[in-house]
Length: 361
Image 1: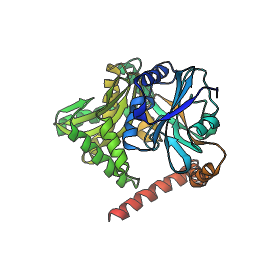
Image 2: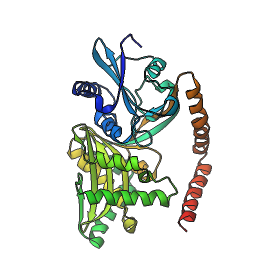
Image 3: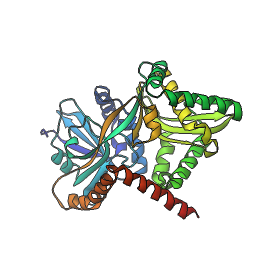
């Protein structure tokens, strides 16, 4: 790292000039302008996570880089919003590549964990333990062009989904889609569906964690040009049947929390919802929908491509880094072992669902 200084601030302590510089650096980056990488997302995390910090790197008195992060016990750090944020990393002036360990020391961090590191993060990619795919829908050329791609690569999927949408309209009432729903009750309904889905599939209920529920509630009220909370709802006869909450910039819709009413499962309302989201996003001038990492059949059907993201931990020598390794690395290796063996992964999924049924009985 150059001799420039580093200041570590709480998100709310950033000045407007620094925030604007952050936005300028993101605007000049070649990576998609994912809203998770904007100062507004870090601001909101800072309101619900007391350990949230931003390291500001200066060159000649001007801010040249930002590293949003959270600081835990013994200096064990994590990417801002780790566990829910789908795009992570530093925001740096082109050509600026600080020494990672010196930067961690300046932040009083022994380690920095990430699980959705942006592909172009030269500062941290060397510390990646695993590469994952994030699934994307390209609507840069408009929705009609996207549909034509689906007709080629997933013709049965598209035909079946559109037929189910028509059947939903005939049997359940007029189908209506709202891209940017402001009704608070609709968000509560989505969160209830999602919590039930987590429990049904034996997974940890994210909305049972107070900070995540508060984070989503605050982001739903965030209306910045490059970070706008967006609730999309599919209605049948004015009854919500599927919904999604995510964040959007002017060019990227980050898909985050989709769910649907199980009573309408036979109509595949979640798939219909994603098609209508793609159509509405294209109409708004958004070119990319990022469905996040994690394999799923619906993502395979909807995607036009994949982008790499990385998971790992940057460390500097010390007791804190050793504790982090002991706490996380064995579990990460076990997960990787299972993922690389599809039959074992299938067995693990069935076991999770069985455990969930036992808990409910």
